Structure formats: structure tokens, C-alpha cells
Image (cartoon, rainbow, N blue to C red; front, top):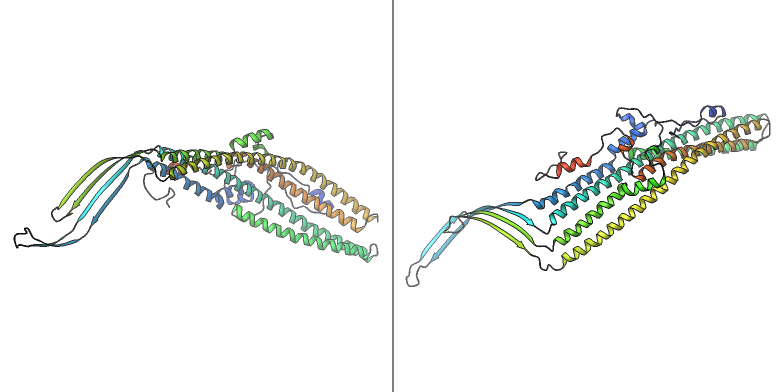
Length: 477
């Protein structure tokens, strides 16, 4: 099956022969990026990739995680502060120079004491905490990028599902409407035959009942179609137009199940995300252990004081100090943090095994669903062909009195059900192929060949990694 075509099928016998269930290969040629591409599966995927708020939110989260690296690198850089003060002071003193002389000295006046200075501190050694924090932040950046790939796959798969669901539900709605048209014609013919005495009132009632049921099915199909339109609008971001056929993507998946499992357990973004989380947790243990090591820093300061006392009008100080801090005991919190980090590391390792098991299970399940969908296409096509032949035969037999009106109505309903089943099978065939591609970890614009600028998370990372100052983000906010 190269593609899926969900056409507007008529239910009359002659029209049915002309409107067979078709399969169409989606064009692989080049195209310009226009909003009209939302009416194709590739175009809808492009819009979802560019505009989906869930995906854009995760991109923002990844950019926020990038800032952890310059924060960690700040431990290598000096810390500089400027301080100053100014005020007004009034003084009034009376003193006696000698206890033997009845002489007193009275003094008073105003001062404006002020001082300013600068202090710089450079850490030389802190138990390798800065280097370990930097490596940990880099691992967290990589983990965030892999989780972004997970979100990207989920959004693209949601877009495919929404597109194919809308295509399916639109075809089913058209089938049900045409079924009502056929039932209306059937009722008219039955009434004509009743008027000439060929059938009974029971036959008319059966036709009326089946027409009422058909109209009810149309209403249910309309409600389902409207719900699918709303879902499409939510995921893709635009109102749907006349949708083109969707095409399976089996060619992008591995050719057999063992190979699919091997690729997924090694390269699926959920697995690689868990691996980077293990690295970050291991480095957190080293950071916590660094608190037990001594810290060596150099501090330099310059201070200018003016009118600090009544007798000192100006004072200048310059100081350079080497500071060594050796932790002896700090209440035991540092030991608790080390134990906590080790437990977290064990948890992350278990999470990695869980991710691999989950990915393996998803691949096996998706592979089975794809095989079932392929087989179901053939089965439902045979069902439709047999139902068409049966309906034509029952109608001919009813004309010569060998079949009842109820037999014709039942054969008609069986054909409708068969065509609905085929529409659903075609939808399942396409969605299953994308689901397998997602389970393997290859559902991405690059693999699908979507002509859209691919979001490169490394661009923002390089823009902020070595930034020493500034509050604006690279996009100007």
C-alpha cells in the first residue's frame, strides 16, 4: 500500500463500481513552503513543527537549561564588588587637658565621612566543584536536547494522528450521508411497490426504520468529524481545508523487528535522555564530595576613606590576602548530601533500564500493530468486494421475489459497514507506520525530509555559553 485515499464513495451499485477504493502515492517532488501545505500531510507536519505551543514550550525549556553552563563556569571567574558610603556627622566635645588645672577645652564641628573601595575574589581550588558542576550542566543540556527530541516526536505523531483521524472521519461522514441518500431512494421504491400491491406495509416500515437509523448515524458521524476538526486545529494550528491523502513511511524504519529493537534501545531519545541523566547524577555525587575538600582563594581590596575621624582626613588601604578554608565539621549536612546524591544516582540508573524496557515494548507493540494494519487492509478490501457482489445479487433476487426488503436493507448496511471498516483500516495503516518510526526514535523532520528550517538547539547554547555579562537573551528579550 503506497498511500491512502479516502474518497467520497457513492453507495449505488453502478456508482460503486466506478468509485473503487484507491491508493495514491504522495508526490515526492519539491514544493514551496506555503500555508496551503496544511492541506497535505507534510504541510501539516511542517506547521506543527514550527508553531505547536507544546513543542515551542519545550524549546524554551531547553534554552533555559543552557544557562546552567555559564552559571557553572562562573565559578572559574573572579567576583568583583564595589562599595561606598557617605554621610554627615556633627560632633561636640568638652575636654579637660589636666586634672590639676581648671581649664576646659570645648570643640564642635561638622564632618562628611565618606569611603569607597573595590574588592575582588578569585577561587583557586574548591575540591573540583566548579569543573564537576560545569560537566554536570553540560550533561543536563544534552539531556534537555534529547527530551526535546522526545517532545518533537510526540508532537509530530499527534499531528499525523490528527490529520488521518480527520481524513477518516470526513470519509465516514460522506459514506453515511450517501447511505441516507440510498435509503431514501430505497424507501421511495418500496412505497411505490406497496401502492401497487407488490409488498406489504411491513416492508415500508422496515425501510422507514432503516432510514431513521441512517440519519442517526449521520448525526453521530458529524459530531465525531467536528471533534476531529477541533483536535486538528489544536495540534496543527490552522483550520483544515480539503485534505490530501496520507502516505505510510515504512521505508524509513528498519526492515525487521530485531533490528528495530536494537536501534531503538541504543538511539531512542528517551534512552539517551536517561543516559545523560545518569551522567548528571554521577557528577552531582562528585560535587557533593567536593564540599569535604579545602578551599583556596585570593582576595584583593582597595579602600579610600575620607574624614573617617576628627584627626584623620584621608586614609588609603590596599590589601591582598590568600584565604584557605579547611572544613572540619559542619553539622553533618555535607555527608547527608553525598548519601542523597548516591541514592539519586541509583534511581537514575534504574530509570535508564526502565526507559530501555519501555522503548523495547513500544517497538514490539508498534511492529505488531503495523503488521495487523497491513493484513487488515487486504481483509477489508475483500470484505468490501464481497459485500458489493452480495448487495447486487440480493437486489436482483428481490426484483423477482426471491428476497425480501429486509434482505436488501441488511445487505446495504453490510456494505456500509465494510466500507467504514476499510476507511478505518487505511487510517490505521498510515498511523501505525508513523508510530513504529516514533518507537524506533526516527520520527524527525530530517528523516521525513520535511522542507522546514530545523531547530538547532546548539545555536542558542553557543550564544550564551561564554557570556560574561548581560541580561538580554539572544533573541533580544
